[in-house]
Length: 503
Image (tube, rainbow, N blue to C red; front, side, top):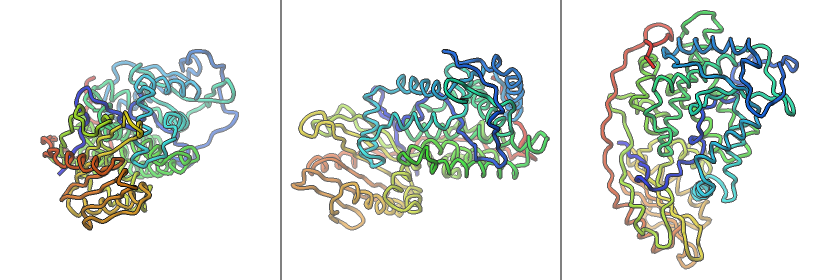
């Protein structure tokens, strides 16, 4: 089965979009509606003036800093991992965090890369060409984040604000805030123990989304255990109770897509932000049910390679995971489209394909049509000369589990192309070949299905479309090299820590 998007060859461009997975932090979102009973008193604060540098927590609120250190030990016990050292906690205002995230993006992506990212996702149909991607990413993430662990500097940040020029902390910590601290300590444990060392966090788009989901799902599971322990006053947690807490967290976070903060942006912005927590926690829960924390740790050694494996854990939890099929990428130096250059080779993956289709067909149909994903490779071309300079063209090859899955995607994406092209479709061969042609065939989009594969070529003229289609149909597809996972050891009793892993 599984066809894979493989990233570009070394030295070729890789946008890895959207930009969220590139940020050098792991954030826990505001879960103010995640659990019942959360309350904040307006006057229950310890305020201090902001200084040019973030303030160490122990100098602002020693009692809170002491409690957080205790929660670090709780995270070590729950996860069975050990910190190499105790990363410091810093308190920053939302403005400071916004500036930090902006610096992170600027360090990772040039303005040119941001421009190309915007144009590429507009070409697919995720948003309009004039969409401000950078502002949306910064606004959505900085507006939702409450705390994060910065792996680069090995420190934690608490994000708090209580009016112009002042930052405030509540005088006490409720159970949800304590769980968030355990979440962030789990990220530090992942880094200190070496679990994250082999993850493709900066790899291709779909692979990095899957890695991020594993990392965040692990942390959401750990914080859920802590919440149950806090409510019962006992160490160890009943799996059913943890499952209920996870369900509430997932429902709350899924509802954030409809919040005023995220609703003002195209759905892919919120979906990319939320998926790591909702999909990731479902995946981590499935891993734990199979073999406890040892099984969760084992997922880092043989990580999920696609959002498909996060959405459908049963395709991952096999002796040999159903990995994406390898599609040989074209040579980026070849003149496949005269007057244009390849600016990206990557894959959307099942999660983003679902979001894309949902912009054109009903949500249930989008999910069904993306669920048979077997892998993909797209090439994005930017025209560098002529009257169409700066325009994007796409060649997008997807591979599906069955011919029925391919036919279902073909049908749904044809509806998307009806709206994207704004032209009447021409049926060349029903269920197998459609095209949309502009005046004089100067603009054409083509959708073709052959067996398990579907190829879309968009933004090219008639001759260019024929040449690109011939080349992409000739690309070699091969089964992925088998990866073997260790057999799980079934957990016994409540959710308890695994045997410690030395850092």
